[in-house]
Amino acid sequence: QKEVEQNSGPLSVPEGAIASLNCTYSDRVSQSFFWYRQYSGKSPELIMSIYSNGDKEDGRFTAQLNKASQYVSLLIRDSQPSDSATYLCAVRGFQKLVFGTGTRLLVSP
Amino acid sequence: KAGVTQTPRYLIKTRGQQVTLSCSPISGHRSVSWYQQTPGQGLQFLFEYFSETQRNKGNFPGRFSGRQFSNSRSEMNVSTLELGDSALYLCASSLDRAEQFFGPGTRLTVL
Image (cartoon, rainbow over all chains, first blue to last red; front, side, top):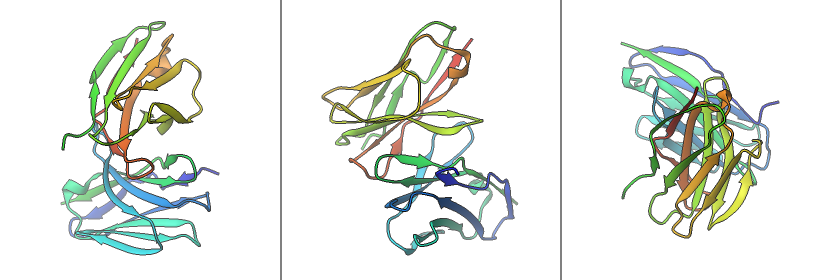
């Protein structure tokens, strides 16, 4: 079992829709959770961090964490073509930050 | 505040050679982590340094090494390059075990 799992996609949504990206992790003692966006040919950019159960909102982005289910998600409201990128979930356990392989999101005009 | 910088941005080497990559973290950040990113494997953790000490190491052969200087700048070295070492090498800095911020990366091509 991978430490951090994401569906590779692509996830295709029309412009203006809500994109829902999901991530599961295996280490129960994980404390910190992050979402990064990576455009093709660029480095990952931090867009959200979440540390406690529940929802955290920042503009069009909402991160959701459920530690009991070992599940973290990212919702993107009013998706724009500029949101088309790969979204990486990262989970910090006791030692290191572990990344999922990412979900490719395609937003069509 | 300036971001993470990495030099060089692009490198072309041949098999058997060695390479040194450099990373300057965000001012005030004492933790530097290195990752290798390839299309097939995603982001793979190489090592993490904090205050000049290697705190964690990933599952890479001994050909991959690194160090951190007193000013928090870090270097990583790959010796005896192999074709499979072709990748994007990313450096990330953070305030200890907090959010990591990535540099633009060094794209290494091994011929």
